[in-house]
Image (cartoon, rainbow, N blue to C red):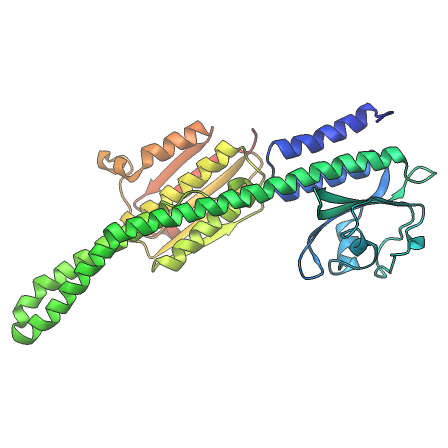
Length: 381
């Protein structure tokens, strides 16, 4: 490859870094797409990943405004030249897309395209998607060097997609391993307690017919066993391995955690998140773990009926708040160290953040007694 200048090298470097630092797949593809348009000097660029129903699971465009994109309408289907590029591994380079034999049409609000350079994104013999640029800004149309540059970026897009597949498979294996662990723990502890609970309840029914006065202590045993089973279930759910934060993002991961607890436990957990910047891996894990610990404390110790989890960002920090309407406690009391406050503060400190816990009078939701855990973590690296 000849004639590559400093700007081109910088754009290629940005694409390579995006793959290397394990950004979300969408962010990587967006970086590659912007780099492609800038590298070859095109007015428009797009990248599509097909689905199995004749459409696209992802279709990114660069060079159009949000208003123009909205006016174009629904995502394209796999027809015309877009469909042909998903079956032929060879690049397409033409001076006028409308002259190509596979060209069909475009919506009325679609930009007028002329010069066109398209490249399938491949992994071996498999076509994973397609990337194309259109409307060369300089006269003369797209060149062989443009084709070579776009091919290089298509290779990086393929690497990102293959890596995403590998991460997803590893995540599925982790989920399977975690389910196996939880099933084993439930069998070893919860199942036995449930069996005891059932036997005690059945015995209480029989005793009630003959000697009602003896039922009261048996019912207390039933209540104690039920409480122990509930604690075991909470520990199993809250102790789940963290999700793929790099793939899901912090807001999605914490939202899934709150949703899971809502489904399993009889308590109202409300989650709200605003758009967030990406943090370093260590900081995202710290925020996730602290949210997990704060939820666990509220569930296990607060006797709360409602928990609110808010995730937001200001100019300097990502801010997490976990609030409950429970009984509250004294954060300065030595025995509350068992609630995990020390570990939460250490996690916050290691992430360069700050943790504040308020509890007692007006410490919870809407001025209730309750507790509020507030974490601030810097946005920067």
